[in-house]
Image: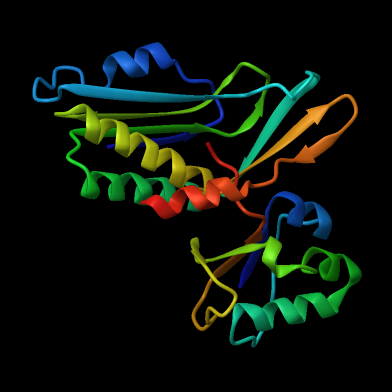
Length: 81
Length: 147
């Protein structure tokens, strides 16, 4: 699936998006896999309360299932307007 | 209902004049404009707004649709820019048209409250000394509860 990063999450990881092969059942399980990869991922995902997640471009929470999902995005709370 | 996401500046005067023009059943039009504000004490060189192409349009359309369902509105307009802007530049506008002013005012506030915290935009401020992502404010999240 495509995993996208925005704002300081993108800066910390150093990528706007990447393809990730995963069997993770939920967003939280995907986060655990990413955290285990490298320090920059561990730093970006250090505090989940400071992050929001969208699955296939809909805001959701970290318990959301990933079956059939094409796109997951991680970002800080939004500041529109 | 019209939702526009663009990098280029927009012409507030032309948009406001054209909005709900000729709709003689609409007794009230409310517009709100968001402007790049300087830092306290000055020194802001620019603001950069990042967004999530695809999700941004969907999120704004969903918010606008909800406003149309909740209030008696004749029309809704949302324009939001992304990219680099300088202090004083217009970032975004919303407009609502309704037969009566209460619906137009409330729907405009609802749109603003929701797009502040639920539309995927992120602001970064650049000055000579620093570059910093604007943090979301607890008050903005709290503002959603009244709806």
